[in-house]
Amino acid sequence: MYEEILPELIVENDTKLVLLVLDGLGGTTDDRGITELEAAHTPNMDALAKVGSCGLHRAVGYGITPGSGPAHLGLFGYNPLKYQIGRGILEAFGVGMDVGPGDLAMRGNFATMENGIITDRRAGRIPTELCEKLVEKLKDKITKIEDISVDIKAGRDYRFAVVLRGNGLSALLSDADPQMTGKPPVKAMPLSPIAEKTARIVNKFIDMATEILKDEHPANTVLLRGYAKLADIMTSTQKYGMRAVGIAVYPMYRGLARIVGMDCPDLPGESIEDEINMAKKLWNDYDFFFIHIKKTDSYGEDGNFDAKVKVIEEVDEKLPQILSLNPDVIAITGDHSTPSVLKSHSWHPVPLLIKGRYTFADDAQKFSERECAKGIIGHIPAEAIILLMMADAGRLKKFGA
Ligand code: ZN
Image 1: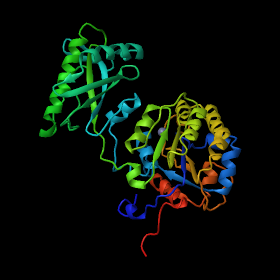
Image 2: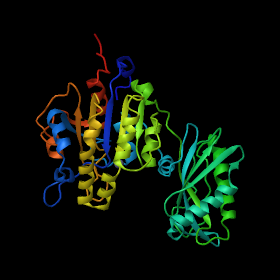
Image 3: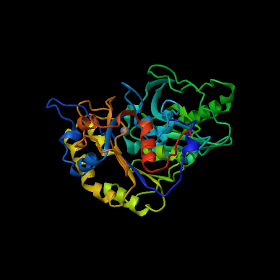
Image 4: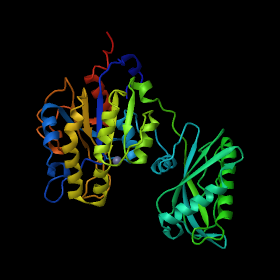
């Protein structure tokens, strides 16, 4: 947002900003008329809501249900429609692979082929352990094709991700996936002459994998699709003049933070406590701290209202530890809503709370969807959040005379 004027407005100082994201935080009312955030006992967030500014944000736009990828880019201040992250990259991030500039990432499925016909696109949904074994087999034999190095990692069930690294790779290819059973396998076709080499490599990969898997059953071939390269994106240091760190347990969110140039240290464990301890440890080394809590979304997707409430309460209980670091500005929000009544992400606006030195103490008395609707921030695009935080931290100077 405001990319054309931002470079001349940036001020560097030693303020500390914290963006605490509870994934899928927002909800919608259930048949009792309440949301998870309303049901949760959150004295610390409520106290902050009283003295801070509240509002609601939309990660992508009106009525749009976002995936976590675009939703996080929005939170980091990047237009999620302009910087789209391909499926292959999210798949690779999800299994903890690195995707660098120029790399080509894609999604893979193990599949079943009988008499030259794809009879199951998911190879009978083989278990993850078998998928891992088969990926090891492929990795042993396929490390390089022509001058391109090949990296493979198992995902869940029948899924895996492939990252190709080398010169001249292009994502302009058709899927090597017939999309339905009862058809012969299809080759990846270049959609532009610049993708001819990549198509050749992808098709060689499939041929080699099929040869290696020929005695396996039901997973005796592979399908590849969702080719993606990283968008050319300015890092948060270049864009905002802030050294940023992403503290997240799940690999996909670490990958998303890395796209915008955040460092993502390895954590010693997976608890909220481990994440907060990492923020404490790195407090002097960074300006901007993105802290990601995943389980709110997971329980929302499970339709488990009470478990989502518990995670919110746990974060609330730990919040004083973050506040004791004395951040100049803290924002608490979600990347999108995941109402447990829907068991999925949704388009509902996401509660947002910002507390800095100069934030307006509005009428919101509690951190909830309903109270945030009373707040002075109003309804904003997610992209604006980081600018409001920076303004309060004295990091944006006057525009024009
Ligand atoms: Zn999410």
